[in-house]
Length: 250
Image (cartoon, rainbow, N blue to C red; front, side, top):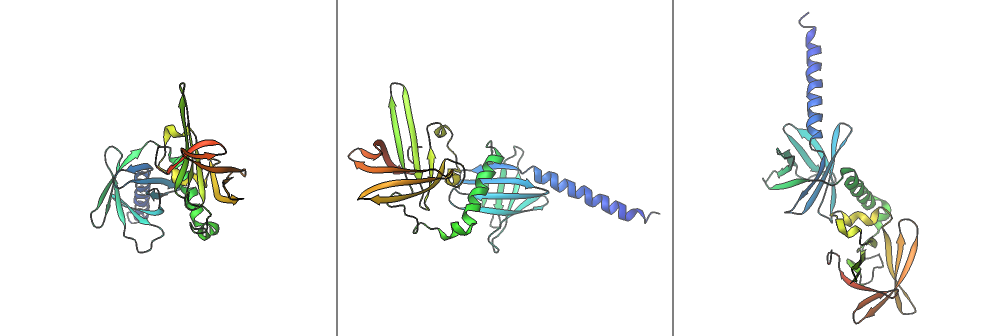
């Protein structure tokens, strides 16, 4: 009779261990930001396992997560030979990431919505892995001399302020930010052109010697802005703009 209990006790131990590991994984779910180096790490439960993305704002990498009590092992999914890193949480819920060479990065848990951040990161990653995206390159996109710059409009007078900009990326995508959006600048703006109706594809076209900024929005609309250079900056359809770097005047 005592031997008959062994399979039951073994099953009970395995189930208990399984639920413990899932509970420990759940604790890692969230958005984390490090300052040095500047990185964003998003971790989310999918069923009974953990998925993750990490980005520096230019490169976006999915991570394979494996629980190895008492740490979580993270490996770049697309790099078969990549060395693993190991994550642990401190008492405040922040995350320590250490690699095999004992390099340490400290991530602060961020208050951004995990659902919103994950949606943008996932859309950005899918855009880079589709056949159409793979064929596209900065050399094939007709971006003229405006790639990796932005046209920004600024006006202040009589207590009224206007501020909006067109961010023009080297891969032919653009992102539009208005004055209301500037109140909450986001570290994931680099991917915003691939999702939502505030971005799309752009090109620089010449008609009768005149340059035009042609915008093909993600919602299907198209607009064309005539570019005129002046002594004080630029005009887009007679509206005054400045041409500056992507990160200037944010």
